[in-house]
Structures are given as C-alpha cells and as structure tokens.
Image 1: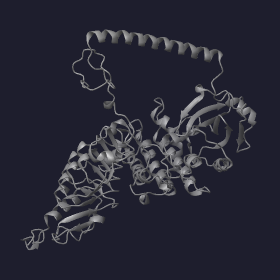
Image 2 (image 1 turned 120 degrees about the vertical axis):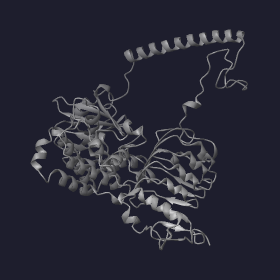
Image 3 (image 1 turned 135 degrees about the vertical axis):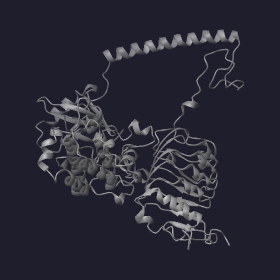
Image 4 (image 1 turned 90 degrees about the horizontal axis):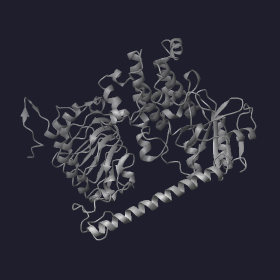
Length: 592
C-alpha cells in the first residue's frame, strides 16, 4: 500500500502524512491565519480535506494549494518545496512578505505559480527556471528587486508571464520564451530595459574604440564597421586622424553659426510663441463664480505676461503658473499639455460641473481660458505649496503631529465629499501628496480631481487607461486599469504613510532592500515597531495616536478592494482617533 495512504500507528493515533507535515510547517510561518486554516489539524491522517488543499485520488499526494484572497500574513515556508507533486500553488492577493523560497524550484510538476498582489521582496530565484512544466507564472505587484534570471527563458511551456509592478532592473533576457512576452508583462519596473519594453540597455550601446591599433576589439573580423572601428594600418590611421580633425572643425563652425543665428533670432526676430499671442488668437475666458472682480480682457492681459519665471509646479496634466493680478490677488493657472485638446461644448459642461463643486478641503476651479495656442484652467492659489513640497523639500519647515493629523483628516474629508456627496460622484484617480495643496492655517485642499477621467475621455473615449502616479497605485488598478473609489482609498493610504513617516513612496532607504513604503511599514508594524515608522523630525507623538493612524493606513492598503473602508468610514475612524478625546486640544495644536 502507498506510504502516503497508510501511515503507521504512533502513540495510539494515526500520524499525518509527510505532505501534511509540510503544510503544517507552512501554517506555523503565518500570522492571522487561524480563521482560514482553523481546520488544518495535525491529528488528521491526511491533509486532503483541508481548506484550499486538493489531492490526487490515487496517490493521496497534494497536487494543488489554493489560498488566494484569504488575508494570510507571513512568510512562504521553504518546506513547500517538498511538495514534489504539486501542480498549482495559488497564494495571490494576500499579505505575504519575505522572499520567494528558491526551494520552490524542487516542485518539478508545478504548472501554475501565482504569488501576485503580496509584499514579497528580494530577488526572483533562478531556481524557478527548473520548473519546466510551468505554464503560468505571475509574481506581479510585489516588491521584488534585482534582475530577471536568464534561467526563466528555459520555461518553454510558459504561456502566461507577469512580473509587472515590482522594483526589477537591468536587461530583460531575450533568450528563450521570455522574448514572446510584451510590455504588459513588465510594466511598472522603472529600471528594466530591453526590446520587450522598448528601452535600449546601456550594454547594447557599443561605443567606437578611439584607439586605432587596438588589438582587442570585439568586432575584429566583422564585415564593415557599423558599430565599432576595426584595426587600421598606420597609413589609414593618419588619414583617419586628418579626417576626424576636419570633421570636428566643421562641426564647431556649424555649431558657432547656429549659436550666432539663434542669438540674432531671439534678439531681433519674432518672439517665441507662448502666452504672448493668446489675445490675438481669439482667446476666451469663462469664469464660473461671479466673485472674481476682473474682466476677461484683464485676465488675458495678465496671462500674456507669464513666462518660465512664474512656474510654480509641473504635474501629470501640465505646467502650473502663478498669475498675479494688478491688485495683488493671485491665482494658479494650469496649462494643459494634451496636444490638440479642444474645449468642445461637452468638455466645457463637464468643466462647469467641476467648477460648481465647493468644499473647504477641495481646490476651487474658478474658470478656464481657451485659445488655439493654450488651454488653461484657473484655480485658487494656495500660498504654502503642496504637501509633497512641505514634507520633502522645505528643510526649514517641520510639520508637527497636530498639523499632520489635521492634513490627514482634511484630505480624507475632501475625498469623501467627491466619492459620496457629489452628483455625479467623482473618482480622483491620482491621489498623491503633490495633489494635496496647503492653504492658510495648514488647511489641506485636494486638487486635480476629475481631470484624469475628463482629459482621457476627451481624447480617447477610454475610461480604463492607467492615469495615476507610480508608487500610489492600487494593485488591481494596475492590472485592470479600472478605477473605483477603493483605488482612491488605497492611494490615500499611501499618502497617510507618507505623512506619518516623512518618506516618499519609493524612498531609497527601503527601495535598496527591495521594499516599497507599504512593505516597509507592514514589516515594522508586525513587530510593533511603531516609532520606527514615525518621521524622526516629528516630536511629542503619543504612541496610541501613532498606532491608531498606522492601523487606519493599513486598512486602506488592504490587498483586496472589498476589505478597504470607504472614505466616509476613513473620516469617521480619523475623527474617532483625533477628535473624540480632546477636540479643542487638537485644534489648538495644529499650528505646531
């Protein structure tokens, strides 16, 4: 009888099979798994009836382990490599961290390996290249770093491959099966290069050797000199040197003539086209609120004076200028960089809807200016810049804990208004610290709401285009391109961690370790190292308050969208943490 079906009696009870022992070892490395794996019992003789486990009916061996979306939190046990009959391993959409065990390369019959949407870090094990029967490999939306192993090219049966949204870098192997996969398999890894992503690698750029008699040229004997210079005789070397000097001299002469020509053109010729000619081109200004005491002509004349010296920011949709009127009042003018974008009547009506939205934590859209040479949106000007600038660029400004709490709550209220109280409701799609502007008394104002969908729909009529900023995007948004309120909640959770820690989402201190801000914070949170997450510049913080805010951020960052709270619920949780004990103390301290 098969040894996996008949196990000898031990101390009056049947012992679990070796495969069962492996699964129990895996269970022990997990936290918060009791609800899901409660019935994984060591007193059973076989694991085949356990949740998520499928066995071969003839041999009793485990052939499938499927625990996707079960809120598992912990490491992947290396012992799983002992399941040498395993054909499917599905641990995706959990909160697993640590590295991918190289021992999984021992599961030689594995056909599907699904580890996406976790917080796994470290390098992709080259041992995965030994899984010659593998058809599906998805390790996307993690915090993996390093290069893509050459060994993966040996997986000739691979039909689905996805390593997107990690921190991978270097050249994508072009040998073997990996050359069959396109950009979607690799998107979101800023350091990757190769033909699959349309990025030329530095190693592929062969520079000409400038040593005429070099005997070590790798192109020796190659017909013709398309990339490098072959060895030359002393005579040809002299001819080459003379030719090179003549070429350099001509190049310098041409450059000097171009410089002089440009100088004369800018000094005496026609001025560069920009804001200077918008009045002559028939520009129109539409103001949504009657409380602006300026005529369209007055606004256009001041816009014509704008140049590079008035730039106060660059965003995903264009450049932002500070517009100062003659009486000293100021506005922010965003120039939309969308090619031939036209403000047709439908587009103008949607702008009017955005202009009608009024909330103390949202930036007011005052109107727009439309001309053939410039498409401009006019907003209220907020003198303290963005949260990103205050957190990361202003060395002489340190936000106190009370100020950070106020910004967190105000930004949440602004987003909650967009999600739940607007008609029609608005999904932001690009929530990030640079889109939270700081006004008087450190009051936060969410900006650029509605623009992502509005501008993309106007151009392509497609609503499923990735529009956000890398580092803030929810995993499911990167995969499907479909934005929901819960994708905004995830991005808000990133902003909350950024507020608490003072670190950017891709701060070098943890990117070097293969982590992003989520993986870094969760690894510290699980060990209750709350103070390690806190910005060291922020003093006087109570541990209970810090812990509460981190817990809220963690909920917002749940891998499964349904597990995230709504922004209304986030506001209520923040109010309970911040306002309930001593509301007056909070407002008294927010100027710290």
